[in-house]
Length: 103
Ligand SMILES: [Zn+2]
Image (cartoon, rainbow, N blue to C red; front, side):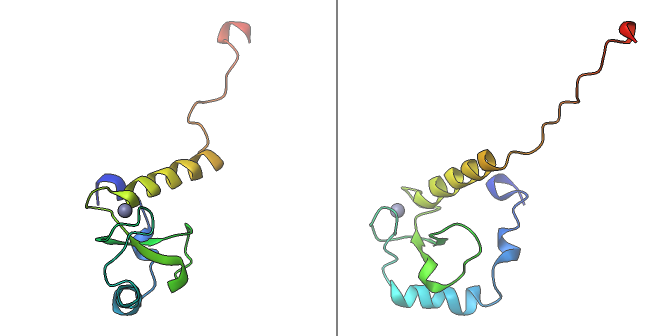
């Protein structure tokens, strides 16, 4: 995997009925795939409105991802940044050591 989903566990965390039930049910509820972010038809990606692993149909709706205006992409990258800010990785910098001449 490469690009923006590199290292993502998103796909493996989707429930087993994602393609067989949830996507078709979301399509039946919103056959024009009206994007829940911008309100225009043609959403190509099923988005979790509230980020996380709540796969209830109430939390799923269509959004533009690979097609303009790429609403889902912007939303996901914003959520990623917010998550990173809330829980930053520990720094790679080693703690300061005293100068060897001072030992
Ligand atoms: Zn949109």
